[in-house]
Length: 284
Image (tube, rainbow, N blue to C red):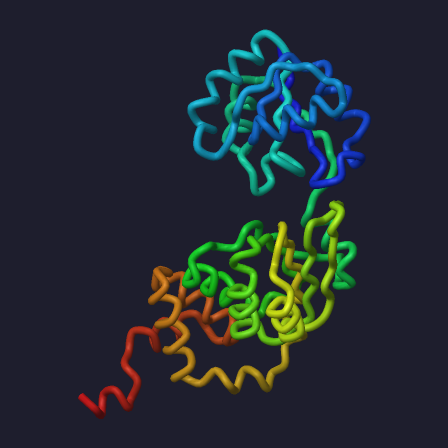
């Protein structure tokens, strides 16, 4: 019975591949790759000749049968374009299907952009929240950030260069001028770490056009200060719920998020969300 190997590959520098990964790639009967061109370049670089099939976001379900049949004959390795497969990349559905058929799933650890950026950021590493790729749409992105206003753990997210400036603007407006590390092109020739405040990062990338792949490491919320609770009067609570709902967030979820941020009871926030502000009633 075949084994499904989840093989981590370099995120930039090819020297970061492990000896175990090279051995497994040489021994499997099939390599399922998110990007077949990148996979063939990697295999060729190390002198490995193995059959390669595509396995990416838009064919991950239709390719399940192909990979399951291959496991009947031998071992299969799954690799993403870079890093650990299944982490912000296709793989979850395949792992579930393979386990359901009774096959072994063996992960091979290796390079990962989020952890690489985190340990070099200078921010706390003992606890963190991994957000993956931030939403492309501004409303969804802002709603996600809003839900993290009071999150004390370090935040890690991926972002595309053409959205970096807008995302930093959203972070500044919603999370405030926190400490941030913006990591670019990790392990590659032009690797760069910007460390400073969000305001400083915005100023820097206005002067330096964002290029490459970015990982953001953002400081968590400061320790809860009871004085901040006083700012969340009824009007602010109503406005925050309306703002979230305007982005498509369901009322119950919006109420839950605002209750957490304001430090108020969920039932109280729901009541406020369902009633009009006094000034609105007077105007009517």
